[in-house]
Image 1 (cartoon, one colour):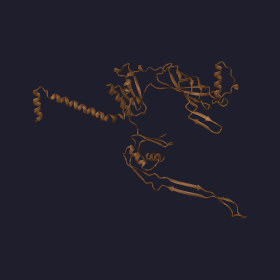
Image 2: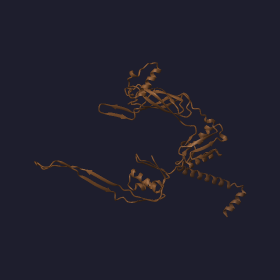
Image 3: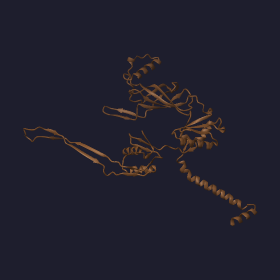
Image 4: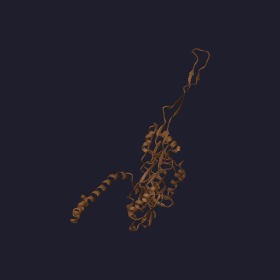
Length: 394
């Protein structure tokens, strides 16, 4: 009745009283939406990642370079020319190119080392730009400290020269030895030259001229690929992205971004999606490291763990005749002690089904086992069909 009377009176005054209440209601609803979004944003954003952090763009990639060269200027820590034949031949060839007629029989130096030079050619590297290179000894050189790499062409997978390296090597490790002791820190036979190679050839690739581009997922997954496609479509406002398989999202250039592929990639790589992952348990048997994913589940299962230890100890004893005895000889008599120890106090432990990762870890820790035994337990649970996850042994 009050509401009806209010409507009649407000209509008589041209809704002059209803409008403030209406605007206040809209403002209150908008404020509630903002508060709810602010409260829920941290929980959602914590599980989301930028698209640029989970995908690679077609054509935007590094290229591997490798070369073979000589390092000179070593303080007697280079290759032995008698055992490293390739170092001797390379040194003779280099001297001949310099106009020096050197004979193999006359060469006797340990200040030269043959090395492999490796580096990565970044995408869109232009002619004249510089890249870092890594130097690694090939022969029996002891230390590359203080050495200088001579001009070394660096080849790509197609056999073409893309960069030329040269410079002084920076070595992080060192070695020192004396008559009775040797100290080695790090790896003195490997070093690095910052900006040590100059790019001489560019890789022809025009990203801006492409009509479509493929996004490759670093961790292939169907659900993640679909979420990426939907996030891109929602941002652009029209269907432009499509997940073709678990590792590829096909992105077509929309009309609003024609000729502006770089701008499109810059915009969409900041979008956030929640990556999905397969339930997986990764085991490193050498170090005993166990890593479990978030979605690892387990059915109800009973677990018991016990150790059987057999210890055999040999304590031989010497049996001697009595003093001043003319009979008998000294003999060694074997004494063997065998002990069998079994952990009888271990009991079955129940791990409930449909538990979270924390509950699973707590249940396994409650059994009082170490990482090595836990690896065996997880493999046994997987064999029984109770572990709903994939086990990957490194």
